Amino acid sequence: MTITPSAALMDAIVLSVVARDGTYGYKITQDIRSVMEVSESTLYPVLRRLQKDGCLDVYDQAFAGRNRRYYRITPKGRALLAESLTGWEDYKSKLDRVFYAPSAPDGGSDQ
Image (cartoon, rainbow, N blue to C red; front, side):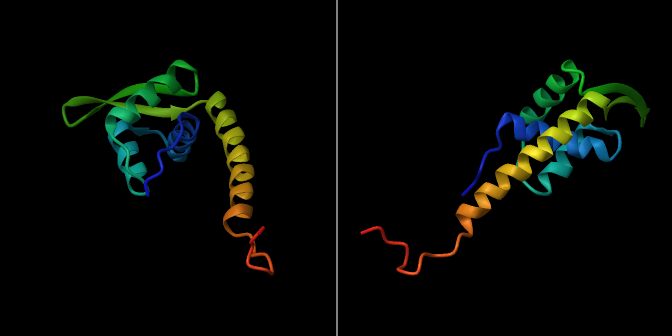
């Protein structure tokens, strides 16, 4: 089963990767792909939205004769990431209670 992350979760994933240190789009894609499938066509709109919302700063730097676009998290982005991580922990805790709840003594049958 493949689970597709929501927009809010994708924002948190991207912010988390960028928060480690400023990085460029292809590297962000590769870091995320190491744990889940994501296409560049999914990632770049997320990066643009986070930039537009003031959560990421963008700068260009020369690399191998051309410019490479780098991203770094802003204080607003760090605040959103912290809020997202708190929300994730709460959500994960609730799901864990469902997924890992002990069985009822009678096998969990209501009938």
